[in-house]
Length: 369
Ligand code: SF4
Ligand code: SF4
Image 1 (tube, rainbow, N blue to C red):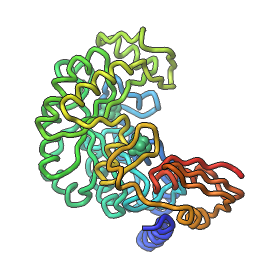
Image 2 (image 1 turned 180 degrees about the vertical axis):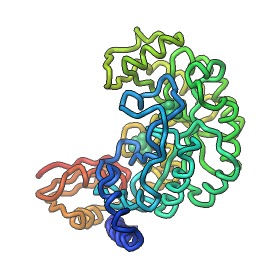
Image 3 (image 1 turned 90 degrees about the horizontal axis):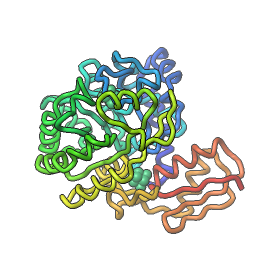
Image 4 (image 1 turned 60 degrees about the vertical axis):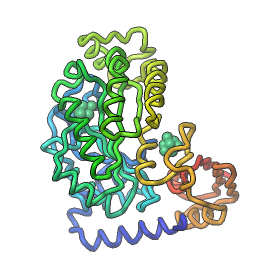
């Protein structure tokens, strides 16, 4: 597929959805933030619910204003698809924008599960690389539905502690149940990565070897590691359960989340994982790309996935895409996995940058001529 074909695909998708949706549904989708905001580095985050009732002590969503109760996200599957199709940053299709669910709510709570399954089905139709993170137990019936509707999905199953997990995740299922979910997903050929994020000093590092060994024994082959980010509230919550981060934090605020100093912990856990023969990804999108059977070298953490599957592109492909997206460009350079574009006129430069990054899976520099 040429780069410009993604623009045509997007237009067809919008047209098709407009013929199916009522005026009220179209209005809801147009006004929703999924139709406007840019993707994050891990891809386009899609909310399956509002709030979360699991109350993990390290969770940042409560500092972002989300409640401790949960309601399913108000858009139906088709409305969500339409909102994404309208989003100027979003490219539909197998090689299009990565999608990530589970950033601000648990997608498999009883209240959110149906909505989540509805969204998964939609993303299976448009085939975008799709990822979901969870710590819930998923039953066989739901796993079968997911396999049928979106077999390329990337699951991230969070396990960051074994012995004292209840101190950190008082209301989440036992980690051994989560390992069992990993095993049953893998048995259905669904890509599963162990999600060791956030790494909690004194908990995750202490249990890391055991967590990684059990994950391997149930068939997991990849692990995504991530450093803890804290606000004042999270800092105090963790102190109450015996995690003193005073020597690991440089800055603390009420609302802003700051990463702790945790490179040493991450490095040590990565070493253990590699010794066990597991592939380590520094960012969740690496696992998403791998599950989708694609490759990416768009940042220093790459190459991720299958480097031989990075799409072939030349200056002409990029020029066609720029024109179709409404940009007038004076210079295009595709060299050594880096694409540089100089723009004379057109919409916001970050729109072009995101499209090029997602479709070419390379580093992209877009600047005014
Ligand atoms: S499950 Fe996720 S969203 Fe819910 S409280 Fe725990 S970390 Fe936060
Ligand atoms: S190279 Fe890997 S970590 Fe970087 S953007 Fe691509 S998939 Fe993500």
